[in-house]
Length: 512
Image 1 (cartoon, rainbow, N blue to C red):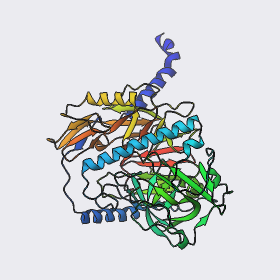
Image 2 (cartoon, rainbow, N blue to C red; image 1 turned 120 degrees about the vertical axis):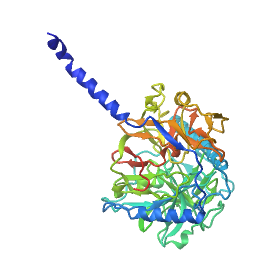
Image 3 (tube, one colour; image 1 turned 90 degrees about the vertical axis):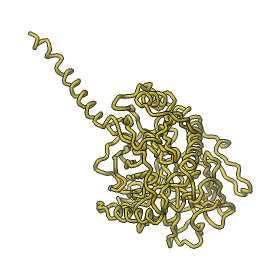
């Protein structure tokens, strides 16, 4: 009798059991992680450089498939970085990064506001002293053009060195420009589309580490005509007296670059990519400090990944090592960019803004338990507002205020460390100076589709000075959107597959 009564319920019970098993599996990460407080031993710069070189050589020899190869990358705050400020303290480096983060967040907010309310000439133009050429504003680019030629070619990768404090980008790539190739440092930024570098003769250039690029010495430099289709994709474009394409890009911190839009060869190690459309900046100003320019890795039609497209399987990935690490990692293009351990989440389209990589953040867990966050905190609105952006150029993850408050309160309720005064963006800080290790509630970011980020301890609490003060490595965002920053991305390999429109996340992948 009871069996007959239960029979109609069997499918529902089976579904419930499968859901419970799935939840159990997704919660398999540890509930607590250990933070090392003891200061690392002082290592001479020469030793750091040797360790970095050895790690880079190991990464470069890693076996890859026939369509890909790898070149190492290095972290921004490693003493061996040629762009690191000399004698900077931990606190000075942090405060400079947080100031940059604040400017970047405001710039992203302004960009979203402009895109969702319609682009206007007055919004996009930056007043340029002494600018003699007339720049006409183009409409917001649509589509995903610039996909390269033919079938897949050999993949390639570039070493990355993350940027100096106060710069407009956190990570730098060593890239060869022109023919013959001249190596320069360029900001590698997933939140930007147009690639550019400073060129001579230069009306106004900031100081950079390498000699300024002279296009007259490159046999592969070719100006683009105003009427070319790729010139038409610029948001701000103009024509020179020679009817050649001009570009302008402005950033939220007041930095800008203006000059000739052209095609040039970029070299990544021994691998050359020809006819890359990029800016040759004749009038540049800002906080790029040492970098020759910027490599745009965004999602828009003018970004480097979009231009190369199917030539390299429409895939690239990066892994950001810890700030103090001498371990080499890489920016990889081609099929080998995606490791076997990767788990995927869909890239969400924003029909009004194509630059940023949006993902669905399903929940945040603290010590294994989901944080009580409002259901719509991470949702993207119908007009393109809100949502969650994964950005290599933002350091500290920023969550909408309700989500941040819920995460902070859940974390605070589980720790008993001595408190310390807040600093800059941080309102949850602790004095850990008397400890060698600290046990922290684990923080896990779960994305739609099953991908997750179980954060390492130094992605949860960040060291803010040399006196043992650590702060919760998240900040509130007053606007409706959230950003997953590079402090939380450290040690994960983030892969972008633009053809399948998905993002892969794999832990502990900076040397593979």
